[in-house]
Image 1 (cartoon, rainbow, N blue to C red):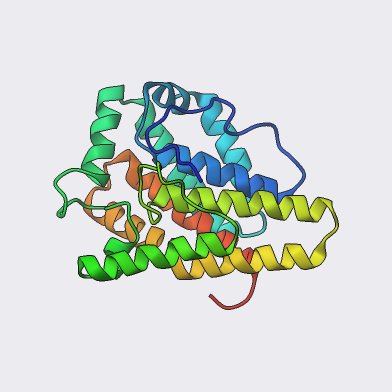
Image 2 (tube, one colour):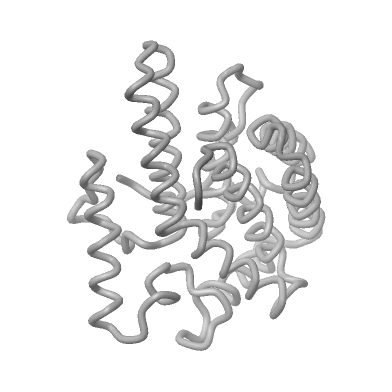
Length: 237
C-alpha cells in the first residue's frame, strides 16, 4: 500500500462518468485521499480549478445516488471547501492543513490517526494500529517497511477502501456474485470498525472548533460520503 500524504495531485483524479457504482466510489475515495493529504503546489493548482469542483460534485452525486439528504449535505460541504480553497494562496492552504492536522500535537484539533481517538495511552494505540494492519493483511494488503506513515492515518484508510471498491468492480465485471458480496461485507466491516466513527469524529471536532478552515468542510463532505456508502451496503452499522 502506498499513500499520497506528501505528494502532488494527479489532475485526472476524477474522469468522465462511468457506469459502474463501485468505480465511482473508488474515484471519490481517491479524490478525498488526495484532497486531505498535505497539499503540494500541484494539488493547490488542481483543487482551485472550477472544473475540479464540477467533476467532484458530479462524481459525488453519482456515487451517493439515492441517498438524497446525504448527497445534499455532502455537496454543500464540498462547495464550501472549494469556495474557501479557491481564495487561498498555497502558503495559506498549507498553514490551514498544518493547523488542523499536525500543529501543536497533542493539542491540535484533528489528529489524522484513528488510534488517537480510541486509545488513551501509547500501548493501547499500538494495539489499535496492529488491529487495523491485521485487517489490511486479511484482505491481501500489506504496508511496505519503507512506508513513512502509520496504518491508521485517514489517507491510508481512504486508500484501502478505494482498493476494495476497485476489487468490487473487477468481481462484478467477472459476474462473481459471491466475491462481490464478500468484498462489500469487508467494506461494511471496515467502515463500522474503523473509518466511519473516526472520520465522523474528525468532522464534528473540525466544524465545531475551526469552521473557517477549508479542510473542516472537506472532512464534513467526507463524513457524509462515508455515511452514504455505508447505507448503500445495507445491514446494521
